[in-house]
Picture 1 (cartoon, helix red, strand yellow):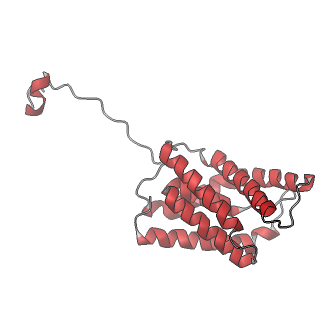
Picture 2 (picture 1 turned 90 degrees about the vertical axis):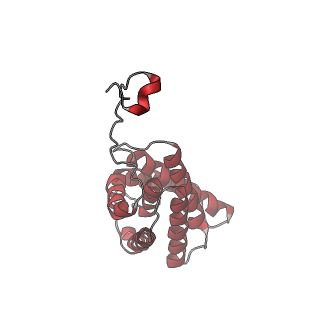
Picture 3 (picture 1 turned 90 degrees about the horizontal axis):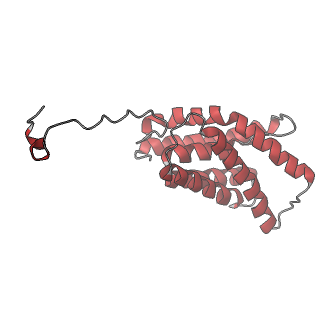
Length: 194
């Protein structure tokens, strides 16, 4: 959970620079016929480190900013990214995500949800979409590229948000010490029997 104004500013700047980088630079990079998409990865990273509400807010702001920059149908990306941010943040709140390779399946799930969700919203809004083999192969390439770059993206987001997080889910927790033997039950609080 992000509790400070500095945390909100960091998330806002992270989202803004990610959208600008996505629109200006990532569209020109082609690897295996596909382009990596940083937005679902950054939204997933913010959600897993900060929780469901900051994740949903980050998804909404990222999607709305993307739609405003490319003057696409307003709300199409923000709807999908809001759901992704909330879902992954909720996963963090219910489960214990303290594993170093956690970004790989989360990045894959966020990317697959984003690709399928934007296609579904585009179909419902009757935007020019078609489910051809080329579109499906592009989704698979996008999924593979984002899965590969998930670890560095999550590491950068963790580095940026680290000082403002109330709880870091990847922090190694110390094991609890076992109960101390203090003697008979009635004398535990008195310090007798140590």
